[in-house]
Image 1 (tube, rainbow, N blue to C red):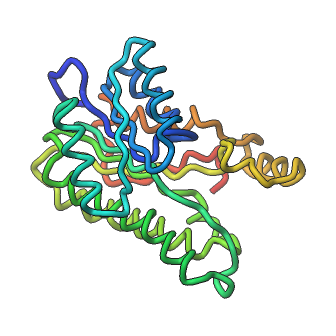
Image 2: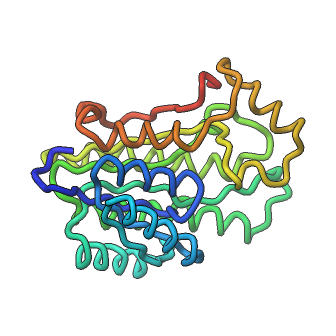
Length: 247
């Protein structure tokens, strides 16, 4: 991060739990003041903020549904008022519902695109004019995009849109020294991933990468921290597949 501020400011969407919470912890550890965005889980978000503050960090929780443009404007307003102008945006909020395309309802299709595509569009549009020069934008994609597994058509379509946004926006931000990259995790051992899967299914996923294990949230947070930090300054317009060699 090219900034003279003592605590550069990072906004992480969907950060109350899972990978988002781990990213927030890592960025706080690296010296960022962190805005923990959540949609419907205030208890978890406030608990995370308390943990970060207790560890000596600076953090706030901000409720906003990223799929709604007015919520995102308010989200940026609140972060700017309470912490200052934003240096790093991490687009982590998202949902994953898998089923064959032919069995996908209008509701599931709309929900997936609302959160995964509209949500990223809204934050990118806001960040394009409000992010500090020299800032970083890190969008979460997915390795599923490279695997073309049955059941993932709609989810993959949303992540393809996120990658397309990123590749174009990086050129539109020329002259501002803002990098835009995607991180594309493989299977990660979060509560969201493990729930509803048998031990056999979990082991099957774990054996898929040549490194023969599931990713941990810390694995993904480390890649995000690299892109947000000084060592990631020359990486721009890229998709980093953090997946143990799965694809």
